[in-house]
Length: 411
Image 1: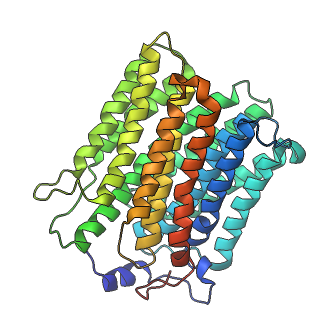
Image 2: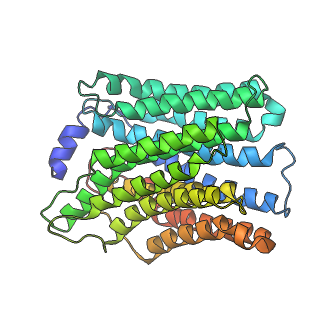
């Protein structure tokens, strides 16, 4: 493991010169400062509107708005933060995007979000242009270092982003009635590719976070995210996603979902080290919980397909959205906001509570088919519980995001 001085020399050699506000000193800072409150506001507004407590009359199709914003709205912010933070590390020599250029990207994301909220007034074409341009611009930013890399180590990430841009284009063609495919089916297709992107990102994040943890605790062992396990899981998820899109309700989907469950669950074997037991360490539990909730999501989808008396696919899909998305964003925001501000990974009661609340909210929301008489209460309670961890994040980590790195390194 490289020490802090080697890290600074290797990754910040090409850091741009000039004075920037600290919140524009690296890609993750402004994104997380905006994303956390956006997550809280959007999920609370959604649940209160869906429950009939308030009315958002300027939104025509509330369900489609909710799904799109949870996937492409929040997801695009995660993509921006991950790549603008990760590319200079994955490709030494890549220049970090900071200052005015970073501000432009943040404002473009924010404009895209506002535009989709008011799509009924602004029209599909303007909203589509803004959102698709944002995705296209991010791909352009990462394309050069990714394709220039001789070993093409991270090219799968770029191809996934291109696929998501294509699917996003399909969505706007659908809602503008230029494509005769249900927009909800296209969004479910997007969900599958977001799960693949999460798996690709987790493989890299797990390596960084777990090895950082091992180094901090002076454990002389190296953690490896084994590519074959992730590749098998990705293959199964893609196969399930394409078959569900092309042949919905096909009986083979039950067995493909079971294959996704088994292959994703198999990734957890990475955390069993040869000489040390790290399974009880809080951050390891955090990372494993992402794997487990994702696997569980596909298990419940399989259960639905195998049970003729039950149709709860869209409920069970929340294992992958409320569960996987919620945990990934919460945990990764914690890791990045700690490591990339020059601090050591830590946990406390509040952070543990956040993970627990996301899991609890996911189960309350996902299992509504088994107590439908309380569905309104379940929507409200689960949404509030799901939002609280991001409020915890704001309280603990916003001071980190608004101050210089503790180790004195730029960024």
